[in-house]
Amino acid sequence: MTVLNIVLSVVDIVLALAIIILFLVQEGNDRGIGVVAGGSSDSYYNKAKGRTLEEQLKTWTVIACVLFAIVSVVLYLSITKAW
Image 1 (cartoon, rainbow, N blue to C red):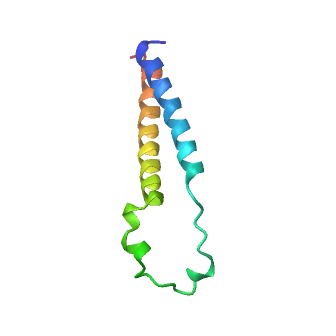
Image 2: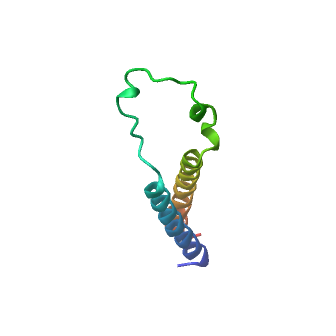
Image 3: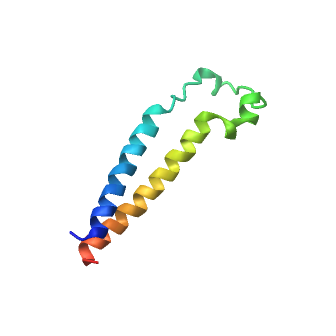
């Protein structure tokens, strides 16, 4: 294994652990029957939705997933092509 493969493997493992931790820290989406009944959409929570901790965790989870996918593909290509 080359140094690039080792570094990419370590980054891949760290990103995988970050995804697991971020996923477990997030709260469930249990709004109950209010969603079906058409709950109010003009609440303060919906207006400040992007600034809440829950939304920040979702954003970081998406970023970590995209980076994990990119690093995994590059790692695969570096192993098969022997870069």
